[in-house]
Image (tube, rainbow, N blue to C red; front, side, top):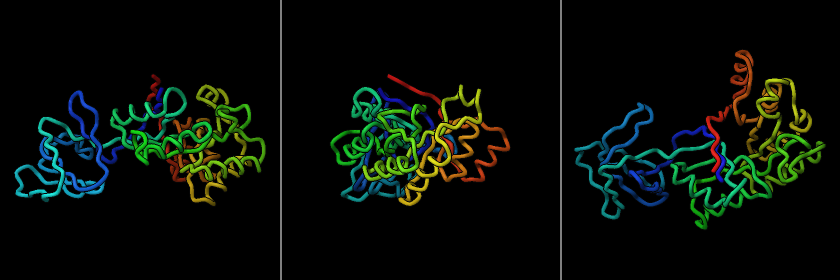
Length: 275
């Protein structure tokens, strides 16, 4: 099963033909000739002459009819009849919660996602999957991986005994995730939407525990992402220095301005898929 919270943005490159899997490229010189491409800024399809990709990045775009010619050693793909789609980023997935993680990763890549942020796993599974893909032992998107879910005992994110009851335990859990190779820390500050509506001031991970995790992340120069849907929890996470709120916080207009002024980013859950 792949568990995807859709909130995506263009990145990198995926090539699609009707009924085919994406073609990805990460090194050397590649020329994409013909076909059409998605202009994400203008929101339209445009005819393609040639797109030059070097070391995984687009370095030049040549219009149809130009007299530019590729270098002799470049790999050229003829894409007549095909569409070039910028690779997609999903900012909130859980690829290891159920099913086969490697199969989930491959399916995610086939869906056009070339980068994902895996926001929590048990026993370092997300980090291991990230490394397997990076080392070529598995097929999938580039994974930016959190460690565990750091939450209060008995709270919404009590997965794999990743909950804490005191400040030192919170610091130790955060350090363990970072020492295990996590790219970021994930905290669970509030419950789910029903609780956020009924009890907007409810906070599961209290300020002193949240602060210990935030301080540990800041010291290691690693961002902290917060599951914080309720009003009080969202404002607490933002005030403490959380970088991102997973899901949409339930706040009023004035509180939304406070979040914006704090520089917080929100990954809205547009849909959740399970399979």
